[in-house]
Image (tube, rainbow, N blue to C red; front, side, top):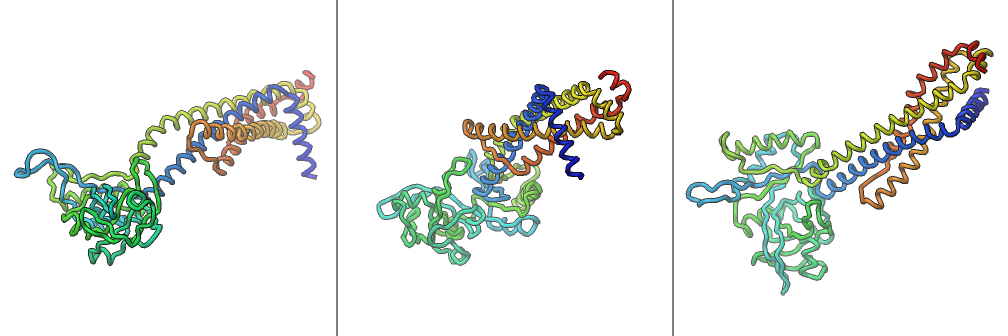
Length: 409
């Protein structure tokens, strides 16, 4: 019985909206435009989030770098600037001991060296690291094995090469088992990395050779200081706090007076992403403003259509009330019609928005993504538009006096 009544009411509402013709189409279109713009805005945000996740997966999660900075030469060292030599392996232990929230620290010493295999030679970046480096930076060993802690403790002359190095020195064939000369020192190649490509800062991730850090310090670079530290934080929300504490601990460890500048730099690993966020902030604000304006126009369209429908159907309202309809029944009828109109506009907006997103992706190259939550949110917003903008005229309809309404018939 209830189902039959609902079907009848739905049929009456659809017929009423069809009868209003052009004005219903205009109201539907205004809601659809607002929902489509909202959908585009949500897809832009979801696309940006996916792009950020992809960059993070490539570079490594929750990372920042502590890099030896340029400092003024001290008396006796000559004029000018030089790279600080105060960043030591002991700093790693101190940071782990004094700062909570640090998951791992990878000490790195790096520089450019000539690498030679038989008659082929090239200049590439050589990095002395601990075994955690490849995991933290999401590198995959395609052939052979990675360096391990035993290699580091024994200062073994072993190396893991990037795919670009293998391509240049060995025509892309596996170099595992070969002896490669780095800066005149022989190293056994124990592994080869899978291709990773260019990172978001334009650096070729495959143009490198990785060796144990202790080997690099004692047998290749012949120094007792590090180039930088790669710090991984346990939780992304702790990043700023850990960076601040790292600065305080290192200043104390390096005996820097208050008036002396830092002899190190703390840098976010994904600087290009931060720039991208800043550049897209204005576009995001504009899209939110456009979505808000168009949704307001859509709501105004629903309000206008509902109000005009009530005005045209005043005799019908009087007749309904004369045969027993209560005020709340009249109000509920027109609120339901407004919600139906708005929901239909929302569905149309989803279709238009989906088509617009595909077109924008094709011709602009923007990263966009349609999330199920975005579709649900859009439909819910369209329903709320009908409810919010249909209540006022519906209440006005419920206050119509039956006698006056039938007199106008």
